[in-house]
Amino acid sequence: MHLHDEFWSEDPALSVSRQAPLDVAEILRGIKSELLRLWGDIRVQGELRSFKPYPSGHIYFDLRDRREDALLSCVIFRRDAQRLTFRPKVGDVVELSGTLNIYEPRGQLNFVARSMKPAGAGDLFAQFLALKEKLAAEGLFDADRKRALPPYPATIGVVTSPEAAALRDVVRTLRRSAPWVRIILYPASVQGEAAEGEILRALAAAAARREADVLLLVRGGGSIADLWSFNSERIARMIPTMPMPVVCGVGHEVDFTIADFVSDLR
Picture 1 (cartoon, rainbow, N blue to C red):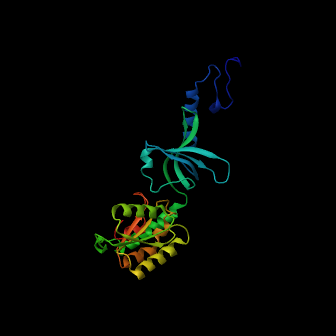
Picture 2 (picture 1 turned 30 degrees about the horizontal axis):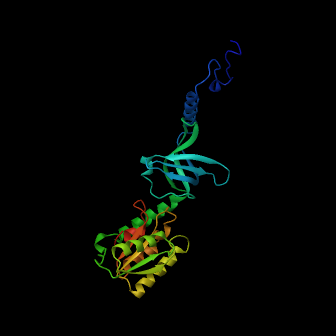
Picture 3 (picture 1 turned 45 degrees about the vertical axis):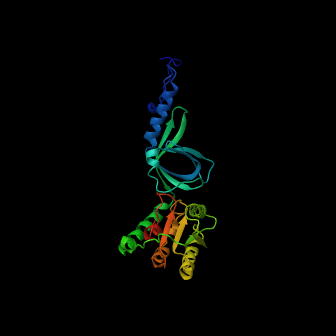
């Protein structure tokens, strides 16, 4: 064998034939196969960047390392995206499960995610499930204790942040469908460390003043950490004691909180 005809590495696993040039697709398929063999199913954590849902239902995004200058292109396809239990957004720190992949038309390394959850959400979700089970066993979610809403309320109270998009949605909808209704805002933060105490104080004010025929407790969606004040046991126990029916509105259909379960209407 002549050196210029063919070269073999001493390691058989790394042998490369020089007899004929390789096709680009052949190289990329080989890399793709090796990635799957070496890495398999893995979990990766990072910060969401360039988050782009497409009409197809697929979601393309970048995952940025929080400590170093490193970026990984990612995709979660429609079937798996439909199973998401929260609404991801740029800046969220998440944990993905999936596989490394080579997108052959561009020769680009990417990560195909099968699942996504907020980083560190495991403990919070466990707490959520434990409280949900506890309150359900006490009957706080039972349909027979839910109060009917007044068909034509004259005054509607709203517990939310004055800056919340949810407040603008409520006001716009009521002005369009029931312009005669009086709206009273009981302001409270709906996210962050102070939110639980502020919501409790707003509920207490609404209960003491008894101005509203029905009370709305509302906010936008988010991760389980963003929604955590709506999973407060103190708030959950206060909602059924309110002198008026309470409607809870949180985000989209994928967002469920303890407050949803104990309120008179979700």
